[in-house]
Image 1 (tube, rainbow, N blue to C red):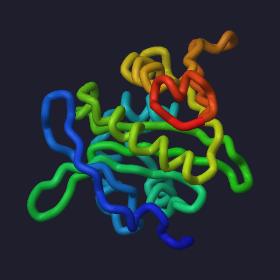
Image 2 (image 1 turned 120 degrees about the vertical axis):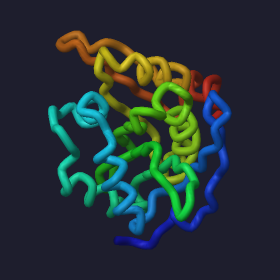
Image 3 (image 1 turned 180 degrees about the horizontal axis):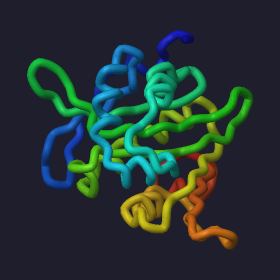
Length: 189
């Protein structure tokens, strides 16, 4: 793994729509046990919305992949809940790209019982500037037509969301230098 660019940054406090305190921070390699527990907590529906696969649980190789994300190339932010003696992962926002590309895939997944109260939106809002800082110019993603929360959130964040003509899925796309991004999120041109 390369040097840890984002894990050295301080965590940022945030609140859900219901007023519950959460903390946003970069994913660290040491979070692998928390990631395992987080992915085990997801329902098959949440797993499908994130991975478009009908798994009963997230395979260990996927957990290992996220635990080893190259923070010089990609963004991986987590929302955590503080509890004694440590933390519990509530959500993950990943912005992943291939080396040499300025186009990256954007995805968010939130623990089932924390969905719909703003955790994903807080994660996304913290992740977008980090992606820009890494030189990412364009984000894309695919959304299940049943994932109404993600469709709405993507629109609020400034993504262009449209239905794919050949499937039932929605596609979302954002260009950081676009007027829509600047108006919705307040980014600089």
